[in-house]
Length: 148
Image 1 (cartoon, rainbow, N blue to C red):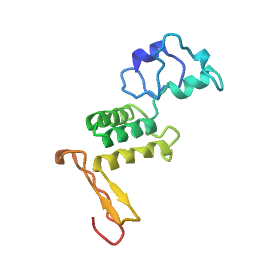
Image 2: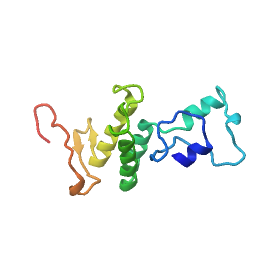
Image 3: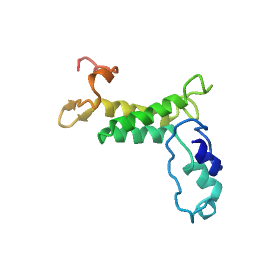
Image 4: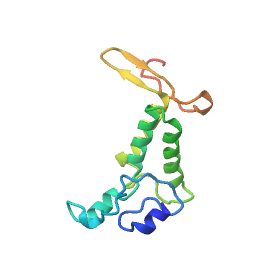
């Protein structure tokens, strides 16, 4: 994120120089600048588009895993984990506290990695793990009154 931030300074910096992060969007065209942003002005565009947010990163990571881009999805997940490691930050990965919904998107990565599928009307529950056995360590809790 360091070289990008040297060039594009506006916005909220949830990732610092030397840390990996997935930007919500970028502006690769040379003829575009923040002054052209519509809505609430250039700072609004920079504040919401020019940043990393763990919820969006987790959503992309989970989607990548569902699309069999497992290594790429896990790389994004690891980047978020490393960025919010307790040795670096005094706050958890919840941008507004530990009850912030974006952080809960990490559960979607877990479901994708497990290949979890559920269809209530058809009474179907299934798993098609995306990871090899050596990488699996998580378990879903059994449903009330039964085993998986």
